[in-house]
Length: 408
Image (cartoon, rainbow, N blue to C red):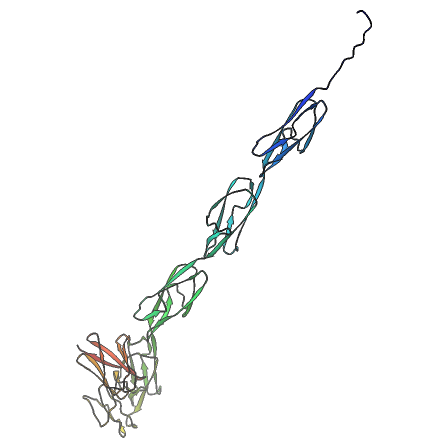
């Protein structure tokens, strides 16, 4: 020391570094880094890239921008998270189908969406034209997709269980789901529609296109009822009423009481028992007379007998006809004594020949009542070819049928 001295200490503030970084540079950046004096303030800003957002700083502070006081070196890390975007899904109508996969999902995540059609429909495309189903989507924004559907096309097939006795309108037809078509099943004469293979009996029937289906129409031969009556219960009794398929034989009978004699049936036949082919519903009445009572203007004869109605024949006892009777003009007696139109029916050279039926519809049947041929011509005689030796029936107009045997 050589004298009094004064010294002044000079101080300065420490400098500190305030640094902000990011947990993932892809997701965002931090700005505002600085080196400042002790107790200076520094503001850090975290900026997220597209598809991300700032979540918090590593010390869980969520302020952004964030101002800090430099009391030492500070290093803060900005934590970024994914944005979430919505997948909105719908069907063009809930009747057609459903969609799956809607929800909120992270940016850039891959999600799968799916469309499921209801019965009768099929998926066509999404509203943006994409036809993938299922479809994978990478989320970059809110999205909305509409699934578009269309109706299925179905085919209905139709068959006849026996096409020789009945047919249907078509064999196959296609249509869209829930459309419909009216189909008829048509039987040939003397047959009728019974049911479809699903036991539905509607005919015509409206079929709905609700799937691929095959339907079969079933037919059956007509049945007819023969009812036998008596002119007077005091005269006798009758029997043989019944139901028969078309063309099948039936036998009816009449039994007299004493003092009465059976004369004829109401259709003119004198057969007793009386067997004939059933071609329609019939009511037959048996007529009786007392012995000695006259038959006015009436004579009943057997098959192939030609007769002209004359005056009164009085029945005193049983008359037996052994041979053909021909008296003047003729009436031809048809099958089992049923009187027909004034026509002649016979077989020649393996054909059935009909004479004297001008202007009438003439139909040839087999013994089962199936129609083999129908003709109407004013040029006589008509000739029908037959497939084989056998028994056939000819029906002229509305007259009862007549039986004829053909040998080829």
